[in-house]
Image: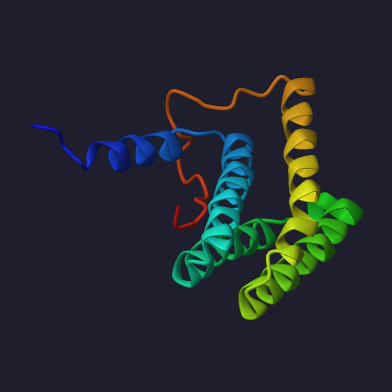
Length: 144
């Protein structure tokens, strides 16, 4: 018998043991995954799936937005904040109008941010996971 809860348990463990750098990467991956699912739903004209997937992407972008540290990040964090707000605006527009174009406009930007983040992790030799999370590690709250 297959335990349907295992993928969720695996994902929870993966998230709980991930480094902060890996969590950001997971958020970008999730946003892109849900955008692809929304795109499929647009093609199938499935309004409920369009809305659900775009809301998930918005939740991820909102989490990225709230995780910014403007004190440490300075101008980069301020610019990312502007970009994330732009993404949220475009995602809302796509959802309200049930038009995939605004979502498709921002997808390459999110792909670029993900690629840049991968390069940052590589250059700084950061592991994307650790065997144990540090104590009192701040957690990101995203429904995935």
